[in-house]
Amino acid sequence: MAELAGVSLSTVSRVVNQQAGVRADVRSRVWQVIEETGYRPNLAARALASNRSGVISLVIPHVFSTLFTDPYFPRLIKGISLACNKNDLSLSLFLFHSEDEEKRLTRRIANTSIVDGVIIASTQFDDPLIPHLIANRVPLVVIGRQDQYPEVNFVDIDNEAGAYTATIHLLRRNYQRVAHISGPQNMVSGVDRLVGYRRALRDRGYAYREELVVEGDYSEAGGYAAMRQLLAAQPEAVFVASDPMALGAYRAIREAGLQIPEDIALVGFDDLLPPNSIQPRLTTIRQPVVQTGQEAVNLLMDIIENGPSPPNRIILDTKLVIRESCGSGAR
Image (tube, rainbow, N blue to C red; front, side, top):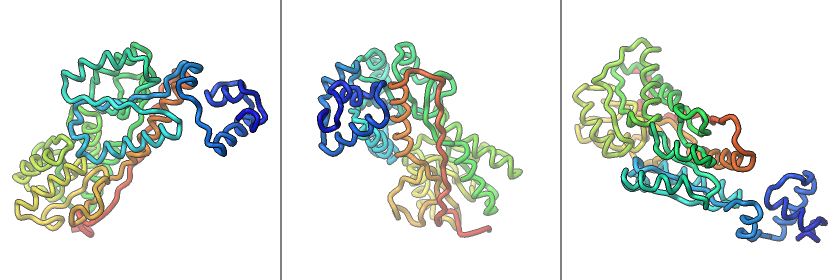
């Protein structure tokens, strides 16, 4: 390897372990030889040399009991895995099945020396793991805004702007009674999407009506129950804070003998449903889930490589994807 690149063994070692003191052109030449030869460094030796394990952890709290049914998490894990593979990192996954289990394992994760850093997929308020990781100076990135911990780096989407866009889209089509099935109000995303909904009503001169808002839990069953409750308020349109909940709302509307969008229009949030999974197809807010996972790994790698710095907060944009579930034009 060193002979092919025309450098010393120590230079190859510094390049592989991403250490300073190597000119850019030399570093590029070494990596070119690595790619051409398919060389893979001995991970154990590299860990000893760099005082790193080459492993990062993804922690998914117990509140995400729908891990294997919610399309969000496979996409997120895909993005994280792609970035880990690109950086020759191994990924360790921590799943909690109950609140007691989460509390029991929190200190173990915070005190572990087998990982270089941690990503927490959590938008809940007062996550108990975060202060433990901060206290133990574990490199940390949170997926989801965390205003109560100003020193924490995070990646999030602009939930409020996405909800605002969805609600405005319905109001501009002259739907007068626009309801909202919100996300959980103990989670930042649920709160932000409700804020966006309320801001859109205010900007268009509509009063906020409590009977037109029901809290859900991001699950299909939660959306179904919330929509059944909303039917008594006779909404003309509903902005639903997640696509799985929109599926449940769709089922409740159809069971009531109503049509979409003729009787009730629907807009979701995620754009993660399989194509043509429901008819009419769902208008929704697209969020870049795979990119969110990739950005989280890149941000964590920067912290691991360069040490703590002023916190970096990455906010990704969303996009309205218009389909048939909210009608074809103004009423």
